[in-house]
Amino acid sequence: MPHCVIEYSSDIEQNHSIRDLISTVHQSALESRLFKAEDIKSRAIPCEYFQTAQPEQSFVHITVRIMKGRTTTEKKDLSQKVLSAADQIIPNVNILTVEILDIDTDSYSKRLA
Image 1 (cartoon, rainbow, N blue to C red):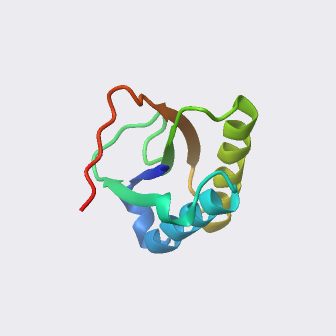
Image 2 (image 1 turned 90 degrees about the vertical axis):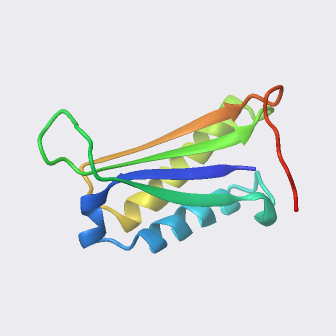
């Protein structure tokens, strides 16, 4: 853990490298020192169809799903670290948000190959 999921308005691909954004978010999770490198998984999902408050506003929303047990301070620090790192890569995106969510370990399942 964690799973870093980046949802973004597909229009930002014209001016920004999504690979660089994924790498930056991934690295910021690693630099938080809350996770082992081999446990971090990052991916990006483009949104072709979306609606925001203002027409043609670009957005990036980053959800970081983590196992329970982190303090509120650790979660806030992680959120700020990811936000700051992403902002360096996509400074002109209109809306940039980060959300840290606890995974419900009672219902979580995993298969390893």
